[in-house]
Length: 295
Length: 252
Image 1 (cartoon, chains in turn green, red):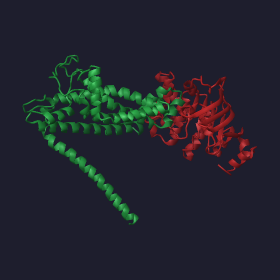
Image 2 (cartoon, chains in turn green, orange):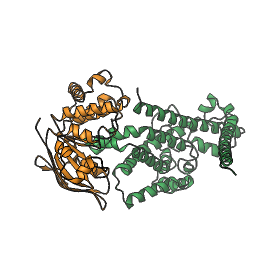
Image 3 (tube, helix red, strand yellow):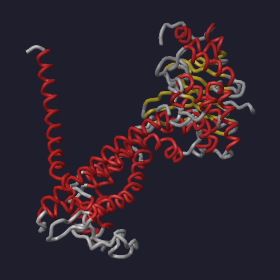
Image 4 (cartoon, rainbow over the protein chains, first blue to last red):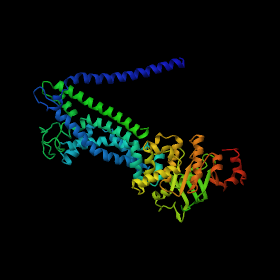
């Protein structure tokens, strides 16, 4: 076989594989959206679910998902940034550091159901936080944190050494150099990574089954006292998220329109995650332009 | 401006077991340009980077010996490296302006060192840019991104940035080797201007440049200083055969 034919065959195979992947993804997305979009309405997005009757919505679940995401990010971002800065700029290059790095890698690949069980045993029972948004946020932190650390570390490692040296050569402290010179340059990478991580958190179900719980109290959206058990803002109440809700009604839903609700909720979930992804790309590009190119 | 020089005594720099600079002793006078020349890998850049303790950042790199400014040995562990570096500016081979506006590139250092007054900062920015012969080209777009400047302008901005924190000494690591001939001659003019106020140490691969801008020249080879003398003497009447071979282009 001549080199030219081999080249043609290789090209055809690669294009074929790529086309297959795109087709599978497009088919999957198309199917979920085709089945679900018709069911999405304002009523569906805002009203509470029904147990045995038709016409339930996903309002509280959607709210819970967003609230849980915010809680998780409030916990994850400062710790992840701090640890990432440490790993990139302060940790000495020795065995302990590579040990930490290995643990972080392992932690990020722990199956989420295992994280959920760990959350049940330690956070829910041992620490006594019960089934609550807070427990769920802590469980999600366990598997979101490694990602956040790695994103920050990679972002900072990608900053050209000359930038760091230029700042230090002006007599600026290491901390000031990190916060004023390096972090702004690393920010597009960190922000993009954070949003992608947020998308993962938003769609997570397994880690939440045993931590945030599978039910929500009858929420009163006019009650803004975060200490009241019926207030949506109370972080110590149980909360079923959208992804958990999909799993629940699919496996034990009694409402006659359970299948449609699951399809609609899935579509909402997929659309939200897509929005996260596009927002991440757009924001990353926007910030890159803003920080580097001509105004 | 007080005249301050720099003197290195028995300076040895090693990466792991490999000594890149071996027991080098050199004195740099104030208000003079000293050029460090030599073939690639001879240790001249490594030596330069040791003078403001920039090699502290490189793991595995150890620097022994003494570096004296006035009556302070800045290579001793008790030296406050952060405040030391304010006194020793540095310019790199590739222009590396911060990803900020032209104004911010210059105001960044002085503001950190305590100048908060807006008027004072404006003054420092203008003075520094004027000294770096960049004011006329940039005065109308001080708040645009520094990355929109040309390579030569960026390098002059980097020089302006380093003089804005009022150093005594400026280290330059091949400051013109990434620039076109016109920008290069601008940088050389600038160096001649700046030596009236500062002690300048410049690493260069370009021997004509060394001959044009410097008063003294040190020839490095394999981590050692082979010859250190007045520039005209090095280039017209070198005492050592290695120096002669290098400047006549027989190697390197």
